[in-house]
Image 1 (cartoon, rainbow, N blue to C red):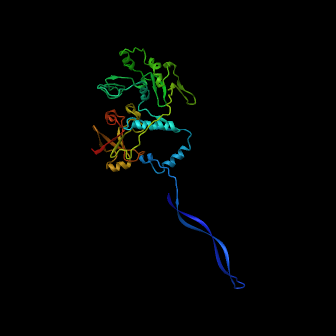
Image 2: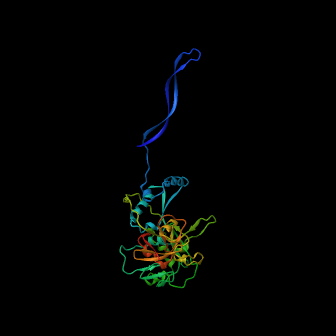
Image 3: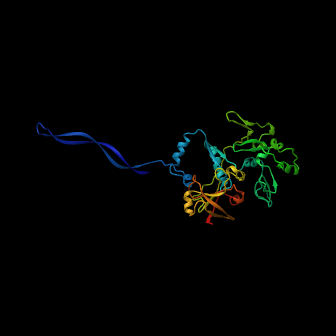
Length: 358
């Protein structure tokens, strides 16, 4: 119940005494008078509160804007990215995402962290515990297979390979050789281990059907676009529908967010990874991206160098203002492998940092 001040028109019957101008006699007349009065009333109102919006510190007009945007659309998607994969509450977030897809009109789209992360996850089983010796494929390890020319054994880049990968649309699409490569392939390693396939593409029809793949030969996969721009490439993974089931979730704790100085692993718009860094057309150095407001709080000037200290080490970066962001979180890039940013953000894309002047 809330108290509300309202204006209301009321009509009253009043008796007035008037004097007859001709006779001078007084007489009473009755008439109705309408007037506006102000009064306070108690009113019952229905309030729609969303605790999640409070946790996210969403603007006050967020709900109204969302209603207007949804009114213009016929299909809705919820896009989730790498921020959630290694989050300490990843399991709970996955359950919430599953419930959104099961019980709402939203389609949940998961953006893989790398080019073929989705495909690899569907064909590989990981041990619960990590071993003592690791082999990294374009990643750090005791022995490194790398397409960058900086590993223990060179591997072809994506445009030097013939095979398939699974994209964000859950399509298994073929890729052909665009640049020659005169070195070892993954198939050479497989043959050394006794699997004996003449070509890498010989494994295409053997991809596991229980994971949604089809037993199709590589040369049978279509690979073109129509004049209308319609994609005719490969095939979509066979969807295995999950029946509606009891999916318990845990409450989101109040004040669950991080406190203090926060760094977010995030690249600038034109840089994605170490491969784009090699492109001279978009050459740029890795910098600490901040909002104009944050620059003022740090007490530094754009172009100055700072030291970003995190658990396990630190890095020095030049500060640059990113006009499209606001707030206090600073953005730390990972497209320059020399920074080893992923080493600091292996468990979460957000980390507490300390920023010092150099």
